Length: 103
Image (tube, rainbow, N blue to C red; front, side, top):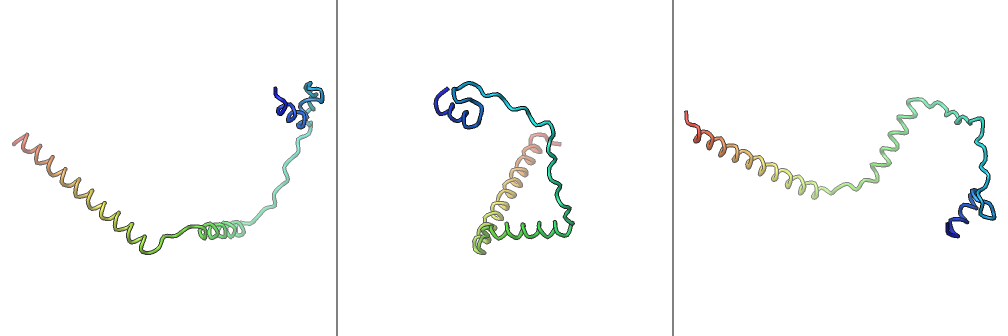
């Protein structure tokens, strides 16, 4: 054990001044009950919740209109492209299966 650890343990009361383990204190016999919280009505809780939601939403960095339009255009274009790709592949594979297995 180095000096720094020994000093820390001495400050915490786990070691004596000479470095021997200190006697442990007996745990308290009676456990303390936590203080009872006062009952708060549902109206106050809802009000507190809504105030906290409004506070958090004020911290959000909302996108500008041009950013929303740009992102929406990219998403819709990608969606149409992927849908056409899946439709095309489905059509080609269906025709291939019909060609392989004629009636």
